[in-house]
Image (cartoon, rainbow, N blue to C red; front, side):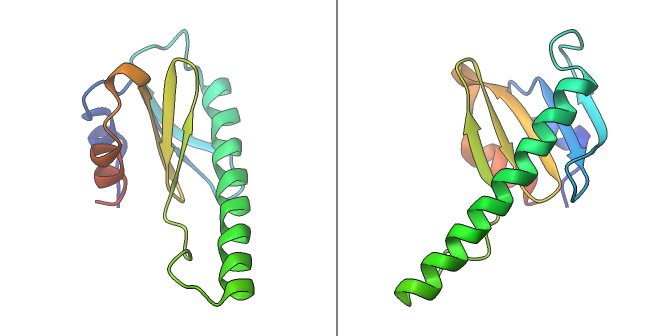
Length: 112
């Protein structure tokens, strides 16, 4: 299981957060307190839960309609913005600027 301190240890990480299955922010760490407030991270948490639900629906639908496997369960997702990227799994997320993102390191820390 990931923890916030380990996620903040990823090179370039500016915020790490834990959220509930309903998308409510549980806990956070940030180096840019004025930019990634708990209000912002709560909204991002809801986006994470919504995207995981949609991705899961699509994966299950694809598998059942095509008979192809390997798409479910969904283990995480990435949301790329103009300046930063969020990488998340079922309960944790990390925010990293696009010019410093290492997707492999982010997923490794999330799945540790």
